[in-house]
Length: 126
Image (cartoon, rainbow, N blue to C red; front, top):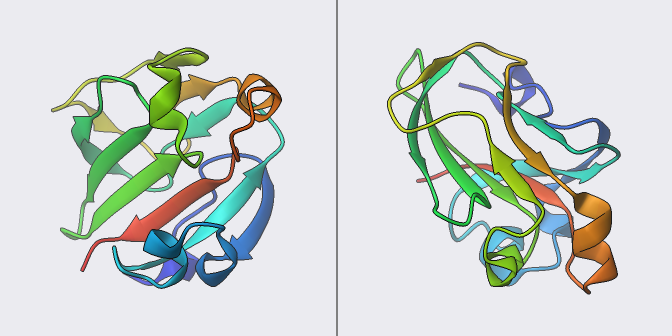
């Protein structure tokens, strides 16, 4: 799967993964991908897929696309420290989802107010 085939999971400006302000992502240590500076709260599936995992804090979602490609959506930087505050999940592991289906609501303004970078990262784990 090519990253150009994957739609943005949230409305906003798409940036290269190398621009993410976290070396784990910008140096592609978790794989190649892209990021989006969000303009709304709805995190949607970038492809038709199965939900492999969603963290208890709802800040990260693992997907498996129909062609077998694994995709990680990481919502914000260090947002795990919010302990789920500002997040609401609409899916669970094992769910089949369609491209554009809402997965999580994320209060990106709240995260920014609390000092967290709300950038949403999409990467393809190597």
